[in-house]
Image (tube, rainbow, N blue to C red):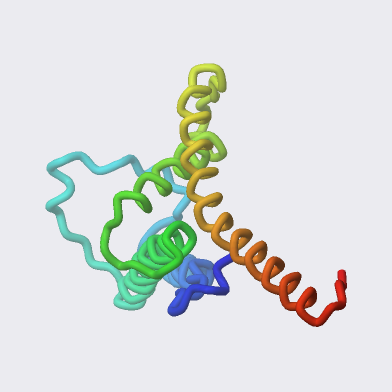
Length: 167
């Protein structure tokens, strides 16, 4: 369904930079401490404090951030290709509505830790999101099937002109 879209960005791998960051942390655990240590979230005053960390850790973190941003940008482009049939880099209202609808399912599929999902409470949102997703896909695929039907009509007409009807 996306083969007809030029300039579609490739999948962006987050595994490699994330794994590298974990490995760099492990190499400097004596300085940074264990990732499993019960470090609590910093308070507002702690956010302005500075700490010294190995350059390798900053570089690894930068690669993760860069990959994360690229993945987010690519997701926007891929969703626009799916919904609009072309790659858009700027915000489109139809694509945003589609992305928001997909997010409804993502939140239900990946609930926060310890949070139970009350499907009944979300049923209205799910139905509405499903309608948006279905409409977007039907809009893209409907054009494909209309084209196939038009081609079949042309083929049938061409075959009738030859005096031979083929199937």
